[in-house]
Length: 239
Image (cartoon, rainbow, N blue to C red; front, side, top):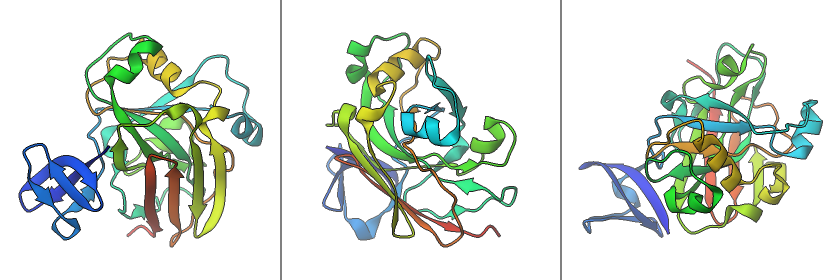
């Protein structure tokens, strides 16, 4: 089942997405002409894992991690599916990274891997945008709009061997599966839960395969995780 958040004439609503129609829990129905798609959750934080694919570690010249390496993006990082990505005026090396992301469904802390499925709402897609020439991860990755997210939360998916592809301006840039991760999605959610109390709507992103690359104004970025969905956004020049 796909879950969506939408902006309607009645305000922000959430519900089940099917063939363009969103049906809320109380039975209200909205077709595609009656809403704008929003990011599928409202996180208090986005917990992002880096260096989780061997090919990426090799490409970027990083050391192989002995335990998960992570950083945090704030809520202002979230960008809706289909929304324009403004090219930041403080960087000349702006990159994409297609990532699978879990969405937390209930408050939890210090859970085991076997408990992860019970506390998650499902999975979605994130683009971990990066101003690569800035100093430090916060400056590089935690700016406004640096985490396009969506389009939906898929509730029925096994994250351990999902194929993904990223296209930029129609050219394939990434092609991998989540089976190539050093640390599995469930392992990472459990690991991070020992350090943080997750709130409903929080996001845990699991890292990007090889070949993150540069973006230019006009580029459409299309990231697909099989069985989860396709996230599309277009880069535009900043005002």
